[in-house]
Amino acid sequence: MTLGTQWMTLSLMFASGALLGVFLDVYRVLTRRFTLRGWPISMIDLLFWVSSACFVFAVLLWSNWGEMRFYIMLAIIAGILFYLRLLTKPVSHVLTKLLQFVEWLITKLIRIVEVVICRPIVRLCSLLWRITRAILLFIWKIITKPLLWLLSPLITFCRPYTTKLKNWWASRKKGNDDEPE
Image 1 (cartoon, rainbow, N blue to C red):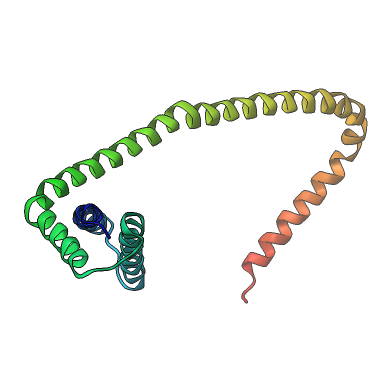
Image 2: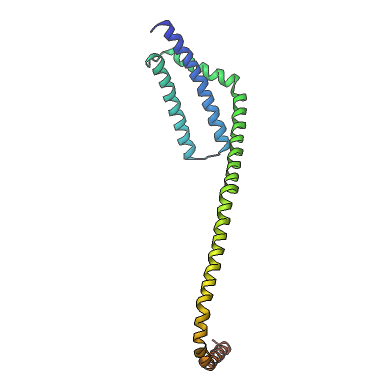
């Protein structure tokens, strides 16, 4: 391995360490915002560290075909420490503000979709239902008026019998209410 390749690898590993610090801050900000407990947080931790290891290995593979040397580990650690010592506070602040902005934006977009799409659809469906109901009631009246007119002699003929039946049923119910159980 040439000296140029070693310096490039050293620089890339230092930058990878700093980028791992950024990923760690993103992870911290997100876990503070979305509080998880138990096994989900353990699975996310595992996923974070496996993806970080894969990222570092991919950069190492690209820079020097995956040759692992002692100075490479030192460069990664130095990059992480550099980031954590100097940049973690401003980056965490920016990430927190960015997360708040994204949450605000999503809330506003949901509100816009509700006002522009959902409410008009609900109102349109309500209007269509009222129109359909009015049409069906009109059709029902058109059908039942002639039918009632045709059946009116039968209704008039049966009215005394239905009145007697109704009175008998009412007296029967009153009698059952008075009986002890």
